[in-house]
Every structure is written in C-alpha cells, then in structure tokens.
Length: 352
Image (cartoon, rainbow, N blue to C red; front, top):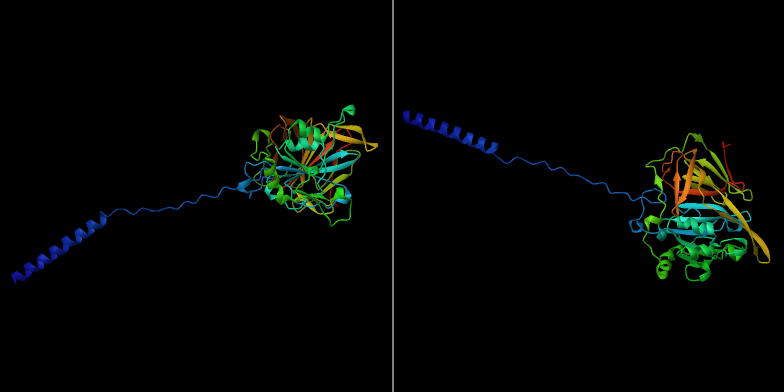
C-alpha cells in the first residue's frame, strides 16, 4: 500500500514538473512580429501646358511644337481643331485672324492637322515663349522701307528651329477631299513629326530657361467673383468676334464649324501696330503684336477676373492683380490676343 502511494505521489510530482516546463517553454518563445505592407501611390505626370495627369513619361523634358493654322471660312472646320493643348488666336492682317496650336508632346499630334499656313512675326515670337519647334507653310518677308519685320526675319534672327512646308518633304501634303483653293488644303502628317525633327537634327530636350512655366490648381476652382456665362472677344476693330458659351463646366465655341470646348479662356490685351506694305501689285496691312504686357482676363468655371501679364526674358508671365503667378484650372486653354489700342475688346453677357 505504501509502495502504491509512493508511486502515485511520484507521478503527480512528475506531471507537475512537466506542466511547469511546458509553461516555461511557451513564455520563453520568440515574440511574433507583425508585418505591415505599405503601398506607394504612383506619381502622376502632369502635362505642362494643361496641368492634366496622364502625360507620357517619354515626353517629360521634351520641347513642344507650335503649328500655324489658318482660320478663314474655307479652312473650317480645321482638321484636328479639338486636339491642341493650347490654341492661340489673333489678327495677322486685313482683319484676318490666324491660330497657333501648341502641343506639349509632339509625338501625340494627330496624323492630319491644318490647314497649315504661313508664319507671322507675332506667332514666331509666341512659339519662342515655350521653347517650341515651329511648324508653318511659308511666311511673310521683311519690308525695310515700311519698317515691317517678316515672319522669316524673326526665324532667321532668333535662329528658330522650324519646319516649313515650302521646303517640301514627307511631313506636308494637300488634302483632296475639299473643293477649295489649294492654300486652304495644306496639312501636316502629325505622325511623321518625330521623323522630320530627327532628320533636321533639332534639339529635342527642353531648355527650361526658355520655357514659360504655367501654374495650375489641383482641382477646378472659380476664376473670380464676376459671372461669365457668355464671352465675346474681339481681336481688333477689323476682325470678327469669337464667342464662347459656358456649358457643362467648359467654354464652348462653334465659330469654327465644330463644337470646341476649353477649360480656360485667357484674353491678353496688347499694344499693336498696323504696317501697310506692297503685296502682289497692291498692298496689305499687317498687324504686329508688340508684347508690351498689360491687362487681360482669365475666364473659367463660369466666372472671370482681371489679370496682368508681361513678357520678360522672352517668357510669358501670367499674374493675378496681386502680382502672384496666375493659377489656371487643369485643362485645355484658349489664348486670345486682343488689340488694346486698335479696337480690341472683351464683353461678358448672360446666356439666353
């Protein structure tokens, strides 16, 4: 009996010792480490001319292109009218307006753009504000006796990298679908721009010291406190008026026989000079923008505000009335050049 009790007592002691050892093993085990996964949001690349995301990485740090496009009635609707990042428009001569289309990524230009027309000094200069490669078909010549500096003169003087339809080549062609004069059918094949630029050996890396940096809001905001549902911009007393109507968050115009919409409308009032020169047995009167800097208007998101602008070191600066960099809303912009001393004006009315 005593022997059995001794054996039972030994078993209890062994069980107790085993339990303690197991407990000690558990408490001395290595602590578990919590693994936290962190994800980095992919950085969005913004288009430097629109402030919109989705810009191609290949185009970062590359030069834009600026293409001269006609605006006469037989040329409308222009091929590719909805595609530029920025459209610049103003008078060139005799009440005729012309456009300059800017693309931040020259490899994104559609295969049919135009009608492409000739260079004028004011448009060559504007293209230089953005270190652009300039594309045109012909150009005006200097008339020293009358004090006129032609488009070709500025190209030569400023050593502007340019592609000219007068030189021929695979980049330029004539559209055969419209029954209008040949000068209204000149096009460029946008998909061949890269090849043409490479063939010319032009610098493609952007020189930031020659590029007018535009500032953008992260989200769409009101331009100002004054409402602007209809905008009427007249370049001079000789030209027609460009009309924009605010609809569904954008400013639309159908003046080019197609509904074209812009997030921003910018009108720059500038001093201009008319110069009459001999032309083909008669004469023509050219208008030059002097880019002296002055007042202007910024219109977006159903509102408008007055602004200031200037050209300094061959770059364009847009400013609010306090002198700070103007913040544009992300999206395509229209820039109208209006003569402050020759009848240019901007009016705002309510939509009917």
